[in-house]
Length: 150
Image 1 (cartoon, one colour):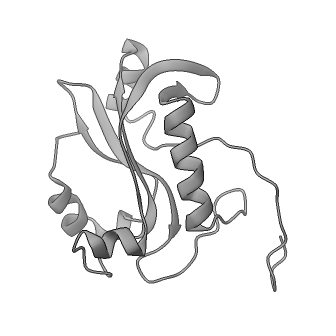
Image 2 (image 1 turned 90 degrees about the vertical axis):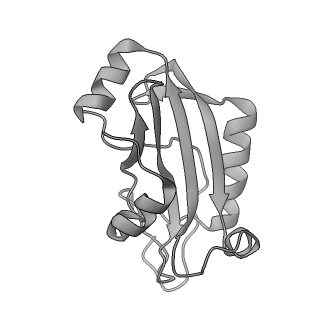
């Protein structure tokens, strides 16, 4: 993957701004960036994830802060830790985007993250596309959604 500016990412691939795919990488420095989680799409639709769960942006923000403060490392497939470390983390909320002067129709509400991968085998899997996306792990209490089946 070739390195792109943030502007190139947001303009060139707006259809991917709700996916957790690797959006940017830098082979020389072993950096990889993308959405760790997106709670609300640009159009305002709340996302239902692959486990049929939803997460409010406020809860995602709390979880992201806790993760960075307590762990700050990259893992491999939820099995092996210590394969890299967090170098960038920001949870984009409507309020933060507005404060930064980002128009409301550009970014979803979600957690953007960057890692430097230090493990050779994992980096090779990122580069080859075997690991094309991020997967966050966490614990939560499931609560029924009003009007939903959860």
